Image (cartoon, rainbow, N blue to C red; front, side, top):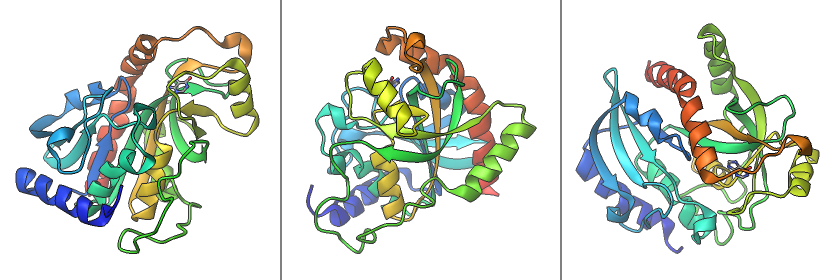
Length: 274
Ligand code: HPA
């Protein structure tokens, strides 16, 4: 993808014209987590395909939504683009560039994952505190446009520590069980073999999934503060806990776990607004 700066400005201009609202936060819904959006008034929608330079998602719905929760306006991306769909890492992360061009401050990413931490159970809610990039293509590969960000962005606080501390405290107050863990990004679309799950566990990851990592790298490149939640939809370690898993299983487990995530996210929406 060439000329990302200009293209993201054009895409943002299009969204601005349509929504005509200033946002500071966006939420990205992962597989089976579109139900999170049921809690909000949806003022207006734009399909990815209608946004200049943005391809249409082939798995998720792929829409920008102007949402309102208790008087707070925010953006939601109903679904995302994945590398396994055939898009480049730069295309997959173009929605994040648009959020930056729109002047947002925070992005809250959600996903479904396989759990490698033996303490995790089906439907576990995890606040991602770090990641391991095992994707075959880096979204910042190629010439760097300084208008977008630094050539060598620091990643020591990729999942914003101050926000994580606040969220953990709120989860305790709201009596919501919230673990913290490291997410490894694999390209998919096949799920991992038992040997791969063992490998991912061994290198220090608590979860594995097919998204999030490229988005978080780009969000850091352009100075957005990141919060990321994962719902563990299938348990993958130790090997005797692995069960055959279909995409319907993933979606069903994510759906079931969504209400507790919804309480926390809605709390954060109000907290970040104050
Ligand atoms: N692997 C990769 N992605 C996933 C998984 C998994 O086991 N579960 C949900 N998303």
